[in-house]
Length: 169
Image (tube, rainbow, N blue to C red; front, side, top):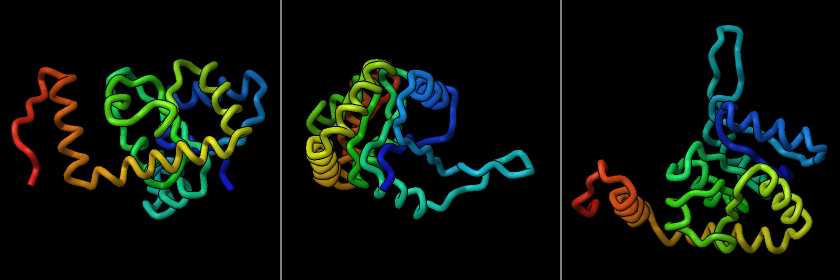
């Protein structure tokens, strides 16, 4: 019953995206959620339980993951895929090495491109559901050990300062 979720703390990038979607007049029904979501009187955040965080993802059709740079990877990508969301990720060299674009996740170039794709996939739920299912199956095939081995190998290719010599046992 949550059409769009934007996971993660309300950072400048996420707030800018939310503001843009509202500014251009799209009445897109999105929901923001992070593990540090509720602000209290002591000026710090109360943690939302991991169970509630996962349930919000499971209730969502589309998930928008915002990266801060082209080679970054964040756990929200994997959380969204495992919970069965059609996952949108800003352009990322790293993510495109792990998953198939427009088959296992949707990649977007900028906020305008994101808005167009959100509208399209909200109108074409069957396609969104197929991408979500493919993404979930892709995540499940890795398994914990295989996934981390693959990720560490890719990190060693992308970043010279990261050295990875052994397979995790």
